[in-house]
Structure formats: C-alpha cells, structure tokens
Length: 315
Picture 1: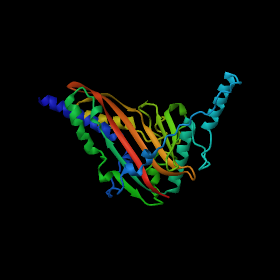
Picture 2 (picture 1 turned 120 degrees about the vertical axis):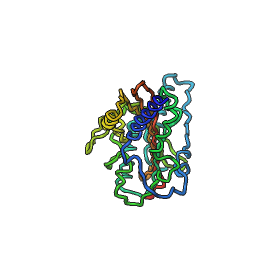
Picture 3 (picture 1 turned 90 degrees about the vertical axis):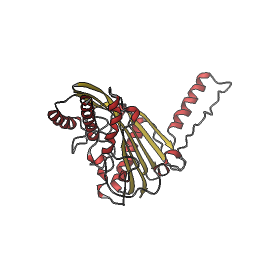
Picture 4 (picture 1 turned 60 degrees about the vertical axis):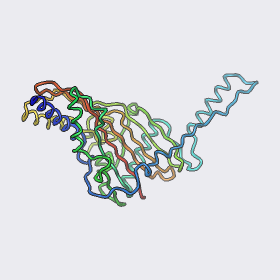
C-alpha cells in the first residue's frame, strides 16, 4: 500500500509540475484587484452574432441555356463574397489569409494605441480529460488546480487604464506590438468572419494541432512553430530541465512527455469603421501526455485549458 501511495504521489508531482510549467509566468497573472462588475458573457458580444444567409436570386431564362444560368450564378456568388458592407464601406474579410491578416492588424492597433481594458485569464484541468492508467492519479490530479488561477478567482481579473505601458506583456504575442505573425495559412484549420447585430465584425480562426511547438525566441519575429505565431507556447526543453532535477532526487524516470496544442481558437470583435477592437477571446487546449516510471509504469494524459478574455475596452 505504501508503495502504491508513493507511486501515486510521484506521478502527481511530475505531471502537475509539467502542467504548471506549461505556461510562462506572464500567462498566469496574480493581481489582487476586484472582479469586474459586469459578467464576461454580457461584455463579450459573442452571443450577439447574427448569421445571415443570402439566397441566390438568379433564375434561368427560358430562352437561355443551362450553361448561361450556371455562369450567372457563379458570377453573382463571387460578387456577393467580396461586396462591401453598405453601413461601413469596409470589405468583410473572407479567406483564411484575409481573416488572419485583419486579426493581426486590429490587435496591433489595439496594443499600439493602448486603450483601457479589462482582462480575465484562467486555467482548468477538465476531469473528463484526465486519462492516466491509474484511476487514483486521475482523481488526485485535481490538486494541480491549486497552482492555477480558477475562473471564479478575483486574481483572474485585471483592469487597466488608458495608456498602460505594459500592455505588450499582457496581450499575446507577449513582448511585442504585433498581435500575430502567422504567414503559413495552410496551418489554419477554420476561419470565419461574421457581422454582429451592433454592426461590428467578429473574426474567428483555429489552428491545426501541433505537437511540442517551439516558442518564439526572444527578440525574434520569425516563429519556428505556427502556434508561436499567435500565442506563447510552453518551452518543452525548459520543462525537461526541471523534470531531470526531480528525477535525480527521487530515482524516478520520466521516459517521455509531449505537449499537443489542440483546437486552439482565437476571436476578435472589432468596429469596421475605425478598426477599434471591442473584445478579444482566446481558448487554448494543451494535451499533456506523460510516460513515468517509478517501481511501475504510469502512462496517460491530462488536458490543460487556458482562457483569456479582453473586454470593457475604452478607447
């Protein structure tokens, strides 16, 4: 029984350590400020999206050929996809490239002009994603949440006044004015732009899954991974350095672990009249797969989620 407990505690120690170190310190803000009075759901206009679908009006002329009718429909469809919004005079981004580039443009403007804003960021270890070979380990992984900022914690929320100088270290990509450096659009899984009821546009895109993405090197604007072009992934090499220290003390062995960034999504609502950001929402899933040996093998995975919401923006 003691051996089983020892194995379980060691597994938790190693796995929770990996989870806590997945994000750099500036991802988990610990600032003692009061929670924003308005709820994030009310402040984030994601629920206000109005989806409209235009029906094709082209009809086949009885005297015309089927081929002419087909060409007419294609022409109408192409025209609709690039038409300008009458209220704003601004073209709605359509392709993956246009959507990602517009996201980069408006987020860079946001970071450069430094409006006031509220930011909420928190982490979680979903129980249904704890899939280790030991059920006891799965249950005890909940202790790892003590090292995270929970959604209902007042430490999850910070409010900044206009002109906050350190904005570049609070809004990804950290340490620079750019909001996105992605140029390989084949790595974009999905991308959409919809018009909200208030006349704002909501950009949304997600990336293909990526195993052990390398973070952006300090001072560099050339990411070696596509997730590093939009966020700050954890550095696997730095994590392994710390794991090796634990191995020397315990005699345990971490045979392997991988960090898979899966279905990470990025959203931004902005005003097309002036390109001013209304809200930014990030949701990241990091699946941590570990193979640990101490007396017996313990293998499996756990998911770390990280949510960041920026809202109540005052220009």
